[in-house]
Length: 56
Image (cartoon, rainbow, N blue to C red; front, side):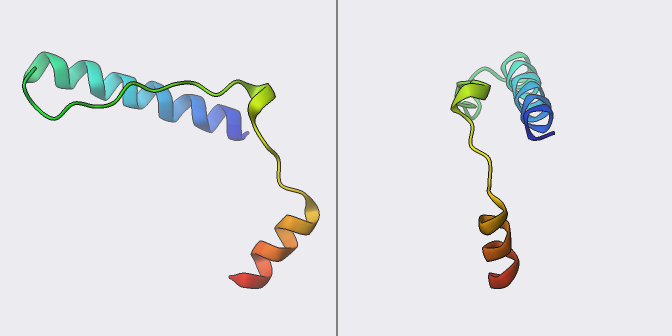
């Protein structure tokens, strides 16, 4: 689920970057994105989820 969301965000930002370049090349520069491989991603444990729920 998170990987799918991340992919959508990356695709959207790349699209915005392309459109921005076409409209005004001297405008604010959108930084290049480096994709994180799924092997480098982290998952939260149930203990971590409980902690986040507690501090809300």
